Length: 290
Image (cartoon, rainbow, N blue to C red; front, side, top):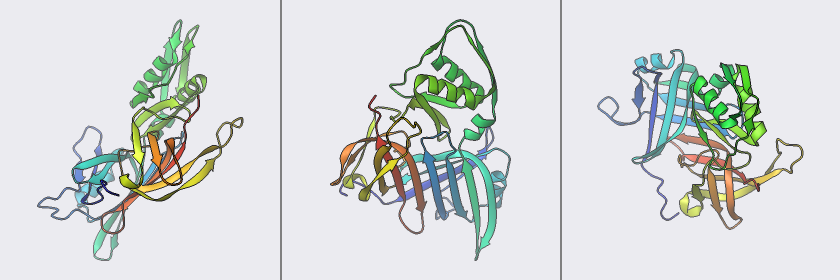
């Protein structure tokens, strides 16, 4: 793996209520001459389902634990090597517990992405005349209070004779995407809207032995959400943590077994800064041919 650096592992865990002063740990200081022991496990997918994260951290200050226990506490985790840290998860704290682990105090944090906000938020929109679905989707995101990004090749249809809706935001997102042949999901707190079975941008990330791939890819077939289509074919690939590669990103896979272009359909990210490697296992599926 010449050229790939898998040392000087670093993390930054930050938490607090929106608009208030929170805390961040991970960087060494007089209070923390050695980074706190942390373990994390994160699950992400290209679906209208909730991404989840579980973080265990030892010997947090009691004031930090109190912050985590507050309503609508936001938690983010960045991880990487040296000064090259990437956001690997962000969301709302849904559960915390603190127990004694021998002589240490272990706090478990469960984090959910912003999908709860979308599922539970009611919106009201109304347009006269002809309106484009992109305008509607942007206005829905604004009412929910989340950032939105559209894929480079997403296309949007017009709605004629006006459009009005009062109800759950998720219903409009799903209807608009179905009308335009698109899909939506939440990734690190951002609403992503893109073509089905395609990447969010043209930027290509290389996965190979030289860039941290571990072992050989495993071929998989995933049942399509459209009964008229064939199964989606791809590969499960494990590699040393690279937080720059996210769900819906465009990847070139190079191995003795296969070389080709795919998009990231789902991810599992795990790590412990005391024992074991920091790894990602990404499910890469074939890009849409449309």
